[in-house]
Length: 188
Length: 195
Image (cartoon, rainbow over all chains, first blue to last red; front, side, top):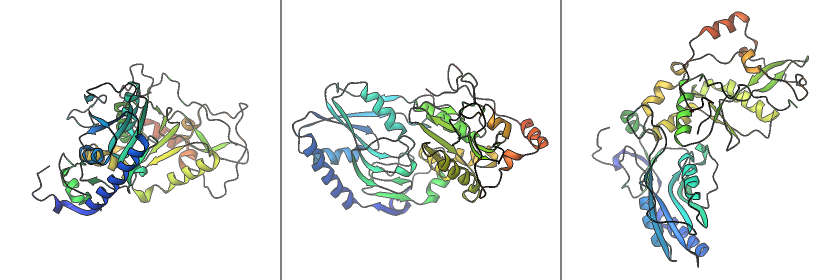
């Protein structure tokens, strides 16, 4: 894949504008603040895609909150034929036992990664574990997981921006957009 | 109607994937530690007036932890009419069965997500075909109704007999002669069940 010279030129359509994202993040932050007032809230974000969402969401929450970060390997993330098993590339830096944990995701589609993370985090005995995602793509769901806070439910299209990448690029777009098909068809 | 489906394969029998895309999906499920079984159940969906099973449907995967069947097809959208009809029939007869159909576009999107779009092109449609569609005998092997008898007849005037279920003996022999994909070891115990 060649590095694009103009990220915006590769975007066919803006699916969720920067303004819509910021307004929705404020709403989610208010709801989460109301729900977790007086509790021990820890936000756990999954690198790398949810980084911008996490950064904005935590600042929209007005109750005391701890944050932690995790990173897991993705299928096909290696060049070897067999990718084996999902691996925790970065684990939590502190115990979440007894904490009210809110897992912050950028997007849920198949639910496979989230399903793995939920099982992993439940093994660490949090007081509660809930899910917050900026984008939900239910058409592609394999594993049904109840989502507690959803930013936007989107149609079944490949999206980039606001943390979401294609080939590690486009994460820094301030909106969520749809790439022109020729971008990924040629880059395969 | 129809009674409970029977297990198609013993647990010790490793899967022989009918299509390379199915093998790829099994690897994805393994990667994310989702338990799966390959074509474990056969659902009769059409009977003649004698009560004999004319057509059956064996979804590709069963995910026991989700109680979900997954049928994967990499045929182009306009060629999946027959599969859609089978799926509708299955849902009519077994409304409690949860099944999700993964079309070629879904598989392609999955590969795009994992940065393996080129692989999707290789595995789609006929080029990815490594074994024939299950023969009628294979599909209904082991089937018995609730009392060990074939289930009662079902009027299905709108549903013509499936060629795969009514193929001649010669056709079935020809299909069986085709190369089968050597099963990839998917579980240490060879049980064909993901971790």
